[in-house]
Structures are given as C-alpha cells and as structure tokens.
Image 1 (cartoon, one colour):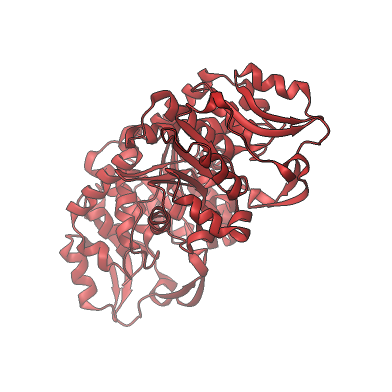
Image 2 (spheres, rainbow over the protein chains, first blue to last red):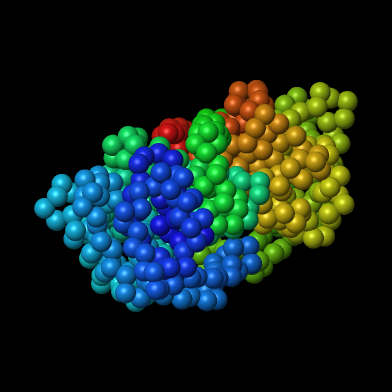
Length: 278
Length: 278
C-alpha cells in the first residue's frame, strides 16, 4: 500500500478530520481501504473504477538513498483520472494537492471557485518540472505553501543556496515555501522569518518512500487543527511533519505510520524540541 | 594567512584569553603577527625559525565545495616541528589540538603530565586516518571531545548513520563527539543527550577554508569562558561555533573572522536561537 493520498491522508488524520480524493481500481484490496477507514478518513472522494486496475509504481533507491530510479510504472486508472470535489468537501479550509500532474492540481483548485478560498499546500515532482513547467508555474501563483525537496528546488530555480532558492520560489507565487533536505532536515521560509529543523534521528531506517507525502499531509492536518497559518503555527506544523515522516521511513509502506499512534508523534515532537533548544 | 592555529586562535579569542602553539618561518609577514596580537593572542608558544619557510598549502575545491584537492603543499618548518608547551601555558584548562599529526597531538598532552588534566578537544584530518590510524586511535582515549566531519567519521567508523557513528566514536574514547556536516549544520553527542543545529544561512559564501578550525576554536574558547562542560554549556558552545564559522566562510583567509567583532557573533547566535525554536 503506497501512493501520496494514502501516506498524506493517514499523516493528516493524526491531527484533524481528513478527506481524501483519489482513484483506485477494482483490485484495490479491502484491507487497504479498511486501514484508511480505521484512521477515520472520509473516502467520499475516492473514485473506484471496478473494471480498472490501481496505479502501480516500483523503484530502486540508489546507494545510500541518494536518488531513486523507477523500475516499473503502470498508470492504469490514473490514465483518465479527473479529481472531483464532492459536495460535502466544499467547506474544506485546508487543502493539500499531492504531486500529480499540475493540470489536475489546477482542476481541484478550480472547483473551489465561488467558495471561500481555502489554504492550499502543493507538492510536486521532478517529472512535472521537466514536462509541464508552464502549468506548474501557473499553479504556484494559486497556492499558499509550496513544499519541495532540495533537488527539485535546484531544478526549478537553478540556485543551490536554499536562502536564494526560497526567495526565488516565493517570487514565483507562494507566500510560504518549505525545502526538504531528506536526512538533513528541512527549512521553512515564511513572510515572518526563516525556520530550520534537523531530521529526527531514527535508529532503524528502512524505506524513504512516502516520507515527503506524509510530511506534507502532517503539515496540512496540523494547520487545520489549529486553524492558523502564522509563523508560530507553521513552525509547529513543520516540526510535527518531521516527527510524522520519521515514522514513515521506519517501515515499508504505511505499516509503521498507520499504527504508531499520536502518543509517539508527540514524544518525537518533544524530543525534537529538546534536541534543538539551547 | 591561513592555518588551523590562526583560524582557531582568532575564533577562541572572542571568548577567552587565548594562547597559541605553532611554527612559522622567517618569511611570516609582520602584518600576520599583528593580526594575532591585535586579538590579544599570547604568542609565547609560536616557534619562529628565522632561516626556515612557513608551511604552505593551496588547494582547489570541487564543484559546489563537495570535497577539495590539494594542489601544492610545502611542509617547510613543519618538517621538524615539535610543539613545546611554554612554562606559562601550563595552567591552561581548555586545550584544542589542531589537526596535525597524531604523534604531535600526543606530545602536547604528554607535557601536561603531573599537572591537573585539562579538558582536551581534538580535531583530525582524513590523511591521519589513512596513514597513522593506530596513533589516532590511541589519541582518542586521551581526549574529552572529538570534533570530526561527516566524511572522516564514515572513514573511521564505516557507519553512515550519524547516531550509530557517534556511538562507535564515543566507544573509542572521547566522552563527547561533534560531527560536522558542512552546510547542513552539526550534531553534538554528549553523555547527557543529543543536540542538532543547522548551519547559519550565510548570504555570501566565499571560501570554506578554516571553517572547521574556527568552529573548534570557538568551542574551546566558549567552554573556557564559562569553565563548564555540561550538556547546556556544550550546546551553547556548538551554537557559538556555528555562528563564528559562518563568518569564516564569508571571506578568503581570516579577513572577515578577524575583524567581525563579538557583536555580530552574538547577533548570529541569537538569530540561530530564533531560527530553531518552536
């Protein structure tokens, strides 16, 4: 069980009522669905194409997890997926757009037309920077928080220095930017200031797949739970995201993330506080 | 003007009275000597060989400062250098051993025999791990704090995970270990806990030469100034070291470090506090 929607919604569900939009095929195992239901995730927006097959991805990480290569990808139901915002989702105040094609991310935002504008976080993926950059650049003007990793930031801005890169990214549209550095933590660039946090030092590193999705999901869930987007709230959100994504990398799939519980997340949040304060 | 003794002693001099041991030739420019004197550094331990030439090193950094290659090295007066602890240095309570040959680092410690044991910080260099590892391993049993960078730590322990590596390094002798990650900050492993701090985000990165020396010098100077080595003091020392070494990389040589002044160091320390607190 993988996919941005699974990782992100489970992560968000630790903080706030969570609603999912996505697509699966008739082969999506009932046990996977139960895992989401168990985390009280609203699946009204999950499109099930009974005759189709679920999206499939497999990849191989390079030595020491320095990048990864796709070994197999089957788009399946994603070939003609169009995200539909269910009527009952229309009052959502915090929206995370996973790293699907920018045109589809736009389509989700379009469906909020005429409604109070929610806070929008968007993730992306190097493929979209290479293939649909104009759409992505247009998207950046419509979102509040852009979450991106160091390599993608370099690809998009040409700037290796994160302070310089973040300044450029914010000029492209989003008021706030988070740049993730994998095992080296992450940095938040907010109109009110800069915040840096190390990664949580896990003792058992298994698989980084989904770490970025759970990171972004946790930020969204935490912001929704406090219903604030000031600097203090964003710093706390990023710290919670750091704690949550440290669980994701400790197992294959959502296994650890889905079962860990809020207590250990709070404990890691406090440990991060202790570890960084002087 | 370069060299570990220059960078480290200038860094330390911002916090506590500083004494230097080193060797130069007759060609050492009086202006360089004045820079040290201006920072009130005691030069009793500076051996001047009027007929010899000062140590010379030049190197080239790889793209994006990922490692460096030596282009020229002239040992000169270092060929037969033997560090001598002057009589008036014998009451030193905090000693930093720069990254010279481990046999010479041992020789400095030997000269404290019969005196109250000072707190000893040692730095090293990948060359010594390759060529004189047994001496280095013996040294580790005689020091309190080992400051090492990520690559050297990997070379010495074989462990890429810093928590695992630090555990191994502490088993080799030193009660405390600091692992430096360049632009990604550093981590302190103390018997009382772990501390992580990001690098100070400089806006003008010029030359990393001497950053590690000034980092270690600042730690030593700060510890001497508070005369404590508990976890709280070490965390503060590492934060000050982070602030001080950020000045070093903003210019060639000691130019920025030697002239910046304590005020800007305190300002960067406070900025680091603000940047990491949540």
